[in-house]
Amino acid sequence: MSPPSSDRYQRIYRVVRRIPRGRVATYGQVAELADLPGCARQVGYALHALRDDGPLVPWQRVVNARGEISRRSQPGIEPLQQQMLEAEGIEFDARGRLDLERVRWRPRAKKTLEARA
Image (tube, helix red, strand yellow):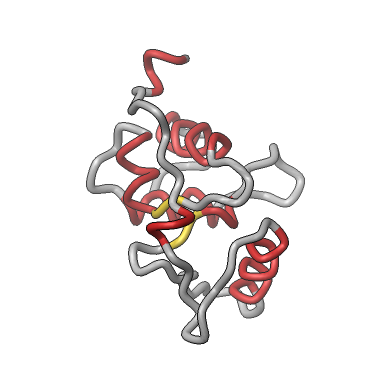
């Protein structure tokens, strides 16, 4: 696992900061946009490594490919994430899923972060 200050984690955080309020992205989508294809799990590690006193990264806007909030090792995080997303206007169905077709973030063009940095 890479340290939180690693270039990979910083690329992931830059992508997550771009997700607009009321939209979500999947772990795999964030990995692709961070130019880390196939590294969806590393996106999860990077978000888990965030500190409460660190820079603002809207981690709640990242969900799994089924449109669900992924289980965490810390109890109570899943309901918090759902509440935060609902406060942004995102609705969940009775199974705890959101409609990815409706709320998935679709950036205008895929830009590699190296070109933006």
